[in-house]
Length: 229
Image (cartoon, rainbow, N blue to C red; front, side, top):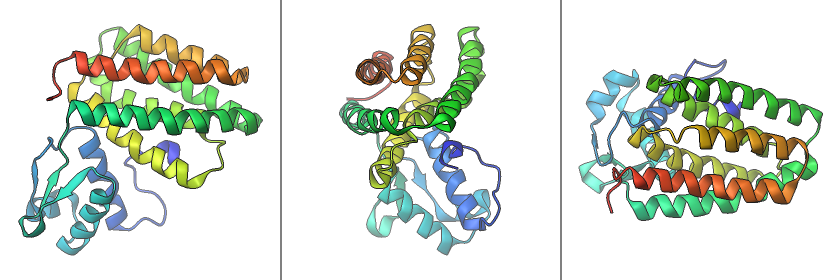
C-alpha cells in the first residue's frame, strides 16, 4: 500500500530486487547516504544483498526519481541538495497536493475519512513524543507525516499526478531528514486543523492551510542554516 511506502518489512510476492530498491531509496531519503556520496556497487551489493546487475537497475530507477545522479563511466552518486532545489520541490508539492486534496475532498467516501483519522492519530502520537523531547522519533515522523498527507489526498483518481507527487514528497522529505529538526507544536497543530477541515469538507480552507503548512516547513528547514546555497 502506498501509505506504507517507508515500511521496510518484506511484502508478499516481492523479489530481492524489490526489497533492495525500497531499502536503498529509504536510506537515501532518510539521509543515511549523504548528498553527493559515491554509491559503490560492491559495497552496496553486500549491504543490500543483491547482485551488481540488479543494483544497476535499482540505481537507474533512482536516477529517474532524481534521488541519484549518474556520472557516465564514473558510476553513481546521491543527488545533491540546495536551497533552490528545496524551494522548487515545495512549489511542486503545493501545486500537486492542493489539487489532489481538492479532488479527494470532493470524491472521498467514509472509508477515506476513516483512513484520514487513523493516519492522523498515528502521526499525532509521534509528534507528541517529539514535542516531549524524544528526537529519536524524527524518522518515524517522516514516515507518518507521509502517511497522513497521503491519506488526505488518496481519493484523488488522477494516477499520473499521484505518482509524481509521491516522488516529489520523497525528495522533499529528504531535506527534513538531513536537518533532523522537527518544527514542533506549530506543525502538529496544523496537522490537527488540516484533519478537521478535510473531514468537514471545507476545501478552500484546507487548501489554504496546506499551502501555508508546506511553506512554513520549507522555511524552517532553510532557517536551520544546514542547506547550502
